[in-house]
Length: 141
Ligand code: ADP
Ligand code: MG
Image (cartoon, rainbow, N blue to C red; front, side, top):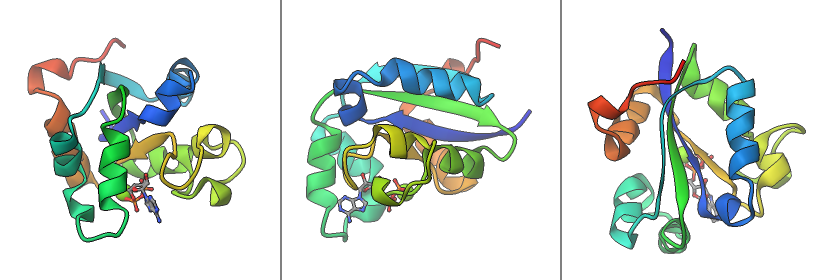
């Protein structure tokens, strides 16, 4: 059993029709999908999810964007899941994201950057619990 991380296919990527492609990459990169669901966050939910960024100048814009349309949230498991998933997605700014990363291939700009990834095991646990109950973390494999 590996570590867990939370991934989100953000509203821009869903709207642009990349959900299937990104889901396929997740499977191809050997993550176990413990759970996945499509949801549309309220502004308040997005504010809660990104509360660590509340002092940042982009906080309001970011939470408007994250509540602007459906997204897919996924609980992933793999050895070293947090760092591994951050490598798979690439840098926050797609202009700086390495070739072959999800953000390089599918992001629009630094805000609408296609996907989310947790930044530590501790935050991964909190973020997974934000969207999923224990009984939903089941895995198909
Ligand atoms: P990451 O998602 O790579 O962990 P951060 O935690 O720093 O990046 O930021 C959270 C999210 O806020 C980013 O994914 C992006 O959507 C948005 N964001 C970050 N920096 C900026 C910025 N300078 N301008 C607008 N939006 C930003
Ligand atoms: Mg972050």
